[in-house]
Length: 151
Image (tube, one colour):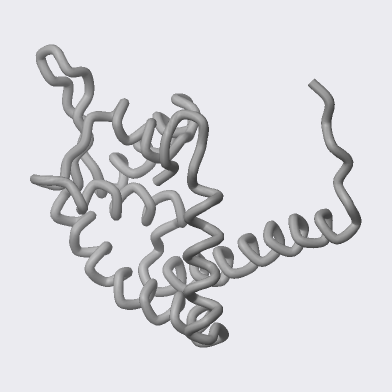
């Protein structure tokens, strides 16, 4: 397989995207952490769990959704369980179920409006409606993968 060269302009697009994603995500995570004590991974996991019936997912489904390695997720869930944000329980045949606790729901309820305001301030307020539509089109193309759509 031959690899096409990447032009200076293409490298600039890639680096700009990467840096922008890191900076904006960092600002949003910092706002959430300052208001609630939740880390970025804490927030991602609590959001994923809260979107499912009964606030629970199988650990393997959470692993697939987040696209993390098994060790990273296991350590993160252990930290969150020690803070009583999530609970893990073994099911009979399906493996380990991860569920959000009442404390997890309470912190998530506090974090959601902070997240919304921070996304608005750090990202959306800087875009025109045309920019938003273009970004949706671009990310839609990029989300397509050989194995299906990236969530």
